[in-house]
Image (cartoon, rainbow over all chains, first blue to last red):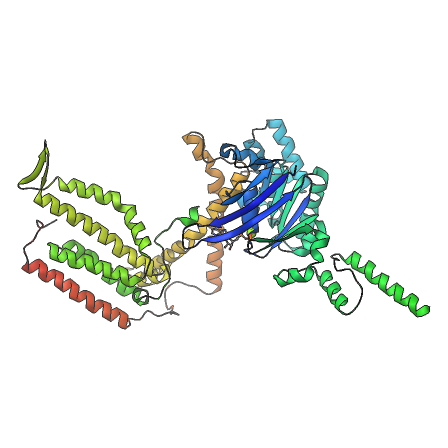
Length: 290
Length: 274
Ligand SMILES: Nc1ncnc2c1ncn2[C@@H]1O[C@H](COP(=O)(O)OP(=O)(O)O)[C@@H](O)[C@H]1O
Ligand SMILES: [Mg+2]
């Protein structure tokens, strides 16, 4: 049984009004325990709407979400339990901070779960460690932190609930390149050490290709593709056609391929590219010699 | 969702009414309201209500929206009409214990219902066909003479514009914050009164923080574009009366004069003062 099974999921905003808008259209897929899934698509392609259905923040207009085989809406009174198991970090999560101290804010989720004081303290400390927040910051007001620190504190607030599935909606938006790299590697190492499932929404292929096992490509509310990262990039040109950027190195490889060089089409890291180019070069050099 | 609440909403369009100057619309609306309450007999009441329907038709806004705005006040209408129905004087047409219905009661009830409904409809026309910025612009222009009394008309109008502009933004923001806290297990729906009040803190604190942040950002942006209040400020879009305004003025003058004549020469159905 898959951890998450999504069947024919659709969502329409403003049904019956002049502003009716189908944001997600008939998406079906399965996600296994421990996977790292990247979700990519244009602004307005329905990524945020899609993920909000996975933890019951919005109720699908059609289709269902099965968590461990049970429909999450089977018992609407228990929807909070689903939200504890499927943790959601929204875009610009720092705007949700409200407590007097960072520590109390991170503890908000675990408190709502009804954990004991000791347990909460433990959760807060380990969550802060995951996102690399220094212990002395925990006693500060969240409004005194820097932008990047606020962001990490807010993410810690969700990690502290220890959800089986962690969903992050464009967590690197608005960060500088260094802050982005640091946060991505923290998320990657959280995934590795906790062995929890992670869903990362982004509109940067460059970011996602580095860490995701599988990638879901959304286009205008539809599932355009859902496959292993490697296989997604072998369709690089198709993906460019729907207006998404593919990693620069993949673009170069496609262009070289068109010039007649025999290169695999699923390259998305510089190391792979160097390896493949060197292979061709070496064979040419040895041809000349021979 | 919160976003779906309609608040004096504007529906862009190209109708006759959309093309009118907001000042003329405000002035004529004021007269409309006065004349709706001046009607004294059925002929003038019919003239006014038919002209209201004509205006609705000209606005090209979906009748569904007008139904919605009437639906919102229908209970008030029924309640006040029903009350007046039993308050008439003269020969009772029907009586049950102390409740009696008279001809004058019926008349008053009808007049009140038609007047309130017309009032709501004609006011909705203004907000449906005038963008908030045009509306405050018009108000500012009309109130300009008050600056003689050192009332800062421009500042008041600017505040109104900004407030209107930010209502949808703040509603959207509230929605987002609520979702973010729900994702952390916040519960707004259960518990006793005190618990529910407490549950609002995680929404209100971020909302205020963000409202202040937006206010500072906006002030900064306005200042860096050299905004310094109304003095000496010229406009990109200068309000100008066009043929649409003169046509509307002429037609409505005829209607208003008609109402006055009816009131003067036909017997009054209502006691004066009603
Ligand atoms: N609260 C809402 N009300 C109405 N329409 C919405 C709302 N949120 C999103 N939409 C619309 O749904 C579509 C998908 O939006 P979204 O899921 O936010 O896309 P993404 O996260 O990929 O940018 C967009 O066209 C957007 O305008
Ligand atoms: Mg989004």
